[in-house]
Length: 189
Ligand SMILES: [Mg+2]
Ligand SMILES: [Zn+2]
Image 1 (cartoon, rainbow, N blue to C red):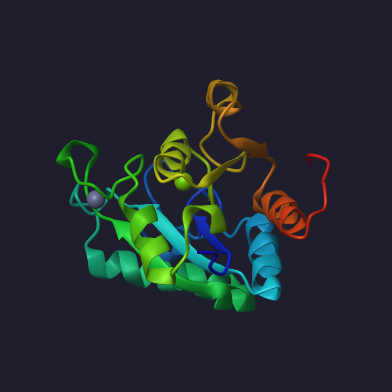
Image 2: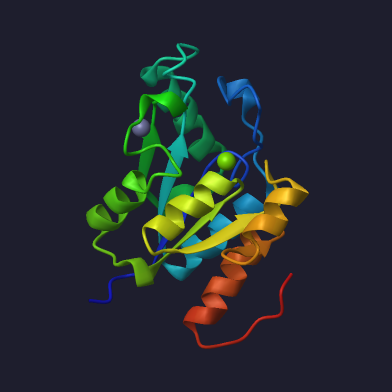
């Protein structure tokens, strides 16, 4: 069953600058140019977007869930009109050692997003800046893109290049995906 196309986006390192100590406050939010431009292209193309983000800062007691959602609202507001295509956000609040099914690289949030948006794996692609993003996508049978605007190290890029498409930023990913949808071929950015 072919549904509408769906883009699953990690947040930190894809749409806004990643911080090692987490994006914990409105003042931490720095929009990435390629992230905003990519999101604008998705919005114009009518692609539904779901954000899928690990926020272990909650499980570590650094931030409560209410603040995570407030900061997330600020992220969306900072992205401007392009954020109109973000129809859902999934947050895993757990720590890596909690063993939950939602924290990437587990595919729980990807499965939930596909289910809620009525899409199959073939209709979707996921964009992330870390190995866990790529592995969550692959575990759900979704095309994976790794962008270089966040945490990915040169070793990550080398290790993941066989299983994920590596791109400069979200804008480059979206240009490729829209061309693919339209049956056009693009040269890698
Ligand atoms: Mg990230
Ligand atoms: Zn979780």
